[in-house]
Image: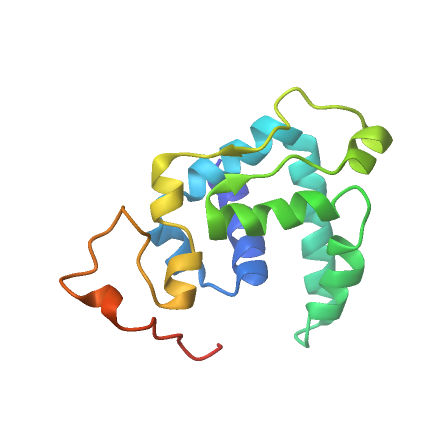
Length: 155
């Protein structure tokens, strides 16, 4: 699974704008990969990662955003999977695919909206992105919520 995990983390790093190191630091990389595979199957995950690697190779060291947008995110089959991976890292939740996806590609038994784990909420990338701590989960320190969150500079 290490090779698959590395590929998954490379893709996830690209689409979340967090480094592989930071994504590993959530402690949830393996859980997220297992979740995606459990919902959509290994074949779909492989197709997504292959498509990502094709976009990276086509970029030839240049900007990849347009290639990812056209080759992955706008794809009717793989786009919703890619978007769910981003949402999962940021919010800790897997979201059910739109009805159009299910009608086109078939219903999946585990494709329902669910929180991946309690740790997924507390380790969501949303919190460091807005410079805040998850309410009720990580103590920010006395009086910390009296001040507005500090939003870090865009990377």
